[in-house]
Image (cartoon, rainbow, N blue to C red):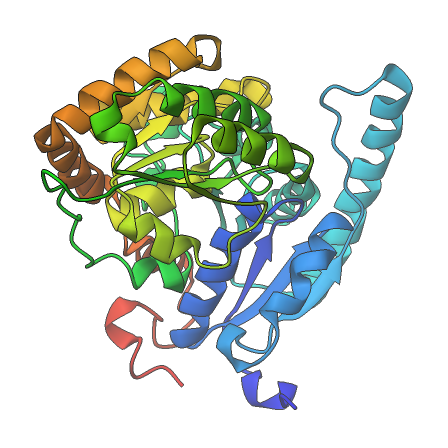
Length: 392
């Protein structure tokens, strides 16, 4: 059992996040990195974030404290629900302000999403050192609200597209932290495509797959030339309700495919792939580029503020993959793209190299560097990258 007393006297950093894994996972990576450098961690989250909070226990996260407050989203809600959301958000700010006054953190870091808003507003009003991490190529709505008020903004993409000059001056490119299992695959070289060898295609659609992929990819694969079809090995994540339909489609076309609604070895499968078809969420893009695999990205068209399209544009611009909007993602166009790429493996190899270059394997460390620069010394030894090994 962890002894909380052994963490007393260490600088406390509060992380404000919640909702989905896309916000929670980079917070988890930062917590582990800061704990290595001798910091204590407290997580302030909402009801939804509570389902992730057990990931922050133990010594790896500096004996993290978990606190829950009220928070509510208002996008795409009815007028009555928006009013209720404003009321919950206001109550959340008062709860967070009381918490921060008691905790007295040295810095407060938000990770976007409505769950972070009450804590970050309370931190700003309370005069605390503050920073944000933005996972996407454009600021999310919560971070747009908070950006003018905080001291630093860490960005996952090198060139966020919507930062005004006064905000850009605060921005630091850190990248998007990824899980350790992805980092372990970083040095796996891109598998060459021999003249007769297998061609491995990985299809992922976020946490639960994408219905459009289950409909379009089998038909597109069926249109490929026999020389490619005979070598094609497909691994595809499908939504549970689409699984049997996709399996029947591949069987009808005489194509072997490894289908599942969940794979527990995604890092290994990505590393083995010659090409990945994926949505363009921040975590998916970060994992694909960290390993260094070429990708066809078809953004989810209903994502808030169309942020996945901006993510995919950034990958496309870096030469690390290709953007295929959902309205253009149909069997004929996809088959033509796959045929041309598999016929020219040198293009895939070049794109894989660009993807590898675009990856940020040290994102968690760079994010921790930025946070440590905010920590006031108050006569104490500054906790920075050079003191990571010496920190108790």
